Length: 201
Picture (cartoon, rainbow, N blue to C red):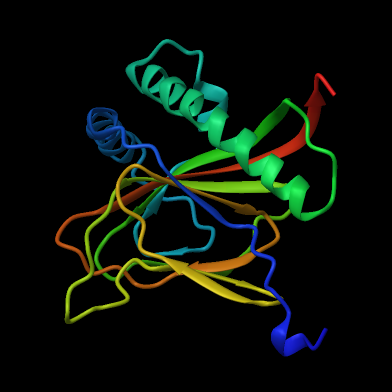
């Protein structure tokens, strides 16, 4: 088959989880975290603020944040199962009825006006995800505001995620976020997954 007519293999999936009430609580938690630890963690973010990458390890500490995160992470299970099975089908691997995995990092991202994420991947992981807590529609003046772009061998994809959206993608896939120009903060939670195990083969 000629490469120009080859069907692209895309490993990005978008899930709409909703969580309007939970998102409001998480936004309050993020602001508390920012006030508690004002020094940002610098990774791919230019401007804005990132938390430490330890949120996955704080699910059982009994704080309001941990209770909200636990509910959020529980809602990731069904999309993760669907995503892994979808990847198995595309790679001609026999799927299982269930899987287990380890979260190896999770953190909040807060983009303030003009903030963006430089092109990057998530090394040493298998699957990565971004869940959106607060976003705004781009304006006519800044039509790419907050857009996330993914680049891969056969093409590219871009998304304008709404609150309650979960994106799952391979950790090795290059991606970046355009500068954000909303009236308030753009808030998301990112995470990495590794050591995926088949249960009930």
